[in-house]
Amino acid sequence: MPSALSLLNPRPTLEQLECSPSRRDGISSDLEEDMRGIGCRLIQDAGILCKIPQATIATAQVLFQRFFYVASLRRFAVLDMASASLFLAAKLGECATRISSLTLAFDHVAKRLRGQPTDVFEAFSQEAYDYKTKLIVGEMQLLKRLGFHTTVQLPYGLMINYLRILGLEEREDVANKCWALLNDGLATPIYILFTPQALACAAIDLSCRLFAIRLPDSPPESAWYELFDTNREEMDIIIGWFARLYLRRGNIALGDLVARPENFAQENGDSVASNTLLGTPSTHWANIPIRLEELEALFKRQ
Image (cartoon, rainbow, N blue to C red; front, side, top):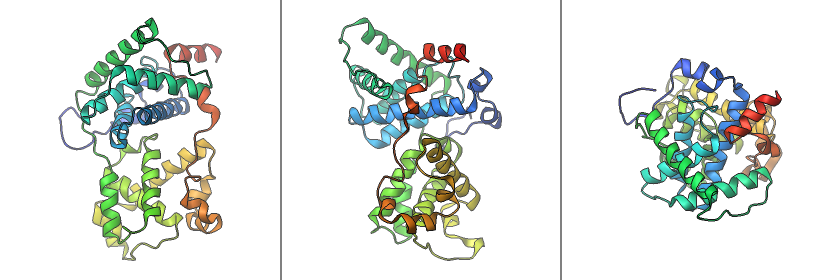
């Protein structure tokens, strides 16, 4: 990560991408991806329970993803860093939330994903104290390892402005699909790898293809997305990450999303306008370790 502070989102180095700290500690790329994904799911669900704005929830997920490019999942538990990320993001977004509310929300969400009884622990129990201690320590580790670089630029506002420029401001279905895609993309590395402009353009491009909407025709040397400082290659990579996410969730076939999205829209009709395309994570969440002891137990079984 860059050491100098700037208004741009920091990006990982090639070394961090090819061999993250978690992979150096023996965690496979697939397991790392799943653990990052469940961490983002915990943040999303707990944030909704605490009535935290979506922009703040998104900021927390980006901070969470950044952290594990400079730290290992074998040293820091997913649950601890997810709660710390949301706690820090709430402060940055000026909507600070009580630690007790956050710990209760994360405990509830974690138990629900595990299929366990969602019993509430006592406010002054040792369990509650441990939760709070881990959250505070996690926040300090976030700030330390990110070098206090907590700037996060999100693509939501850009996406709305781009839709207006393209004359699609009246298409609420397209805007909703773009919003859903950008929210789902938080569970992938795209917010770390690409600019907000590229993310907004990719969401618009895929949404319009799914709804069989033709964007303004123009020569390749001056395509519509170049007006927004984006290129076709970046957009295709981002769309590929969307496809990978949904394929791993078991929602849709990879070919339907990437190879022939226009046909997908025609064949599936109204289902494209709903959130059934995006779906919900499969039951495999229950087997992904979110605590250090669960991860070590998984290594011993292997």
